[in-house]
Image (cartoon, rainbow, N blue to C red; front, top):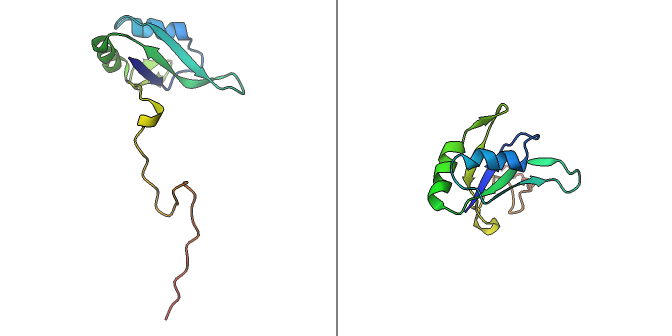
Length: 107
């Protein structure tokens, strides 16, 4: 199962992430996401664990865990098409752009 780990400090490595989650079960793999243009870490990564029970235990234990003055956000990862739809903001069209308000004429 794939676990999303967010709010990571910029100087953490994939091996350190694997070691942190390894306390709660067998970690198959762990990787960090880097910016393509700058090569700097984007502050999140993924951990792969094959056992569902160990995955749940790791998520409960590591969500909110403080590392280098940052609290981790740990959830079960979702595929790109599974994110919930965001509600439209008032005054915006479906692309998130604001529309000009039309003035009402006074009688």
